Length: 121
Image (tube, rainbow, N blue to C red; front, side):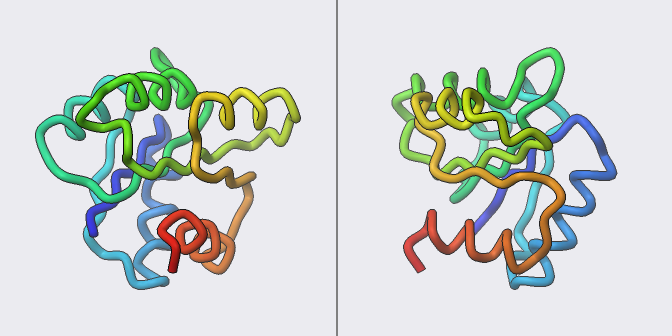
């Protein structure tokens, strides 16, 4: 299964990619922003999106809404990553159709549990 990691910080993309590798996911692509992510999602098949919340020019929440509004992409599992655990953010993400939510910092074990919960493993 191919996973798309979306984050505007290259270091964070590398960290998530490394954590994914530790738990057995090696088919990973990256996007530095929501616009690039949408392009990649429309050109290739992915089984999961892991996206940061705080990005420019398109936030993770905006990306999620775009994906849920797209007939071709609307069913894709989406995990939101954020440094903030504000209740209103969690509610907004849930209302937009997020499948799971991870608060930074996190480790490989947390990531694995969140992914397996989303994929039903």
